[in-house]
Image (cartoon, rainbow, N blue to C red):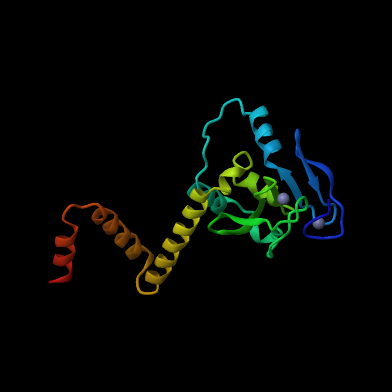
Amino acid sequence: MQCPKCKSIPLHPTKLEQGLSAMGCSACSGAIVSLLYYRDWVERTAPVAASCDHTSVEEANGIKDSKESSAEEINDSRSAMACPKCKKLMIKYKISGDINNRLDLCRSCDEAWLDGGEWELLKSLELNRKMPSVFTEEWQRKIRKQATEDLRDQRLLKSVSESELAEAKKIRTWLKDHPNKQEILFFINHE
Ligand SMILES: [Zn+2]
Ligand SMILES: [Zn+2]
């Protein structure tokens, strides 16, 4: 097996963590890991006291915000790569809304490619034990929804201040499921 990124460099057995085998590239530090092995590793190394078993996209973003490490420093393969095992194109999955890094997955082999530094990135986001959630449609849909909301915020922020945006959001939340929403909107629009 050769590195899907460096092409001519052979992958060699390595470990992402104690007990988690992968095939890594010595040139780019990328690694391919079997999700079968991965799930087994997660089960075998269950934390003694699991305080929370589901990090949401929102939380992942929040955690990222509070970290000093910049995701931009970490390598991310921009172009599609062929799976080193079966040569089919791997699919890219965004990790979170404000992080550009994407994980590559071969659906046929159920193996994920992590660029150099991406395992550490997952750790910093507390996603290292929940990596397969990133590959779900639900996770990706939340990221897209969040991106749309951020875009709307940015658009309104061209006309109003941060505090006015917060106020507008408060009103929107209040109106959202109000049984007389239309009447209230009519009232607001007609002084
Ligand atoms: Zn490589
Ligand atoms: Zn494959």
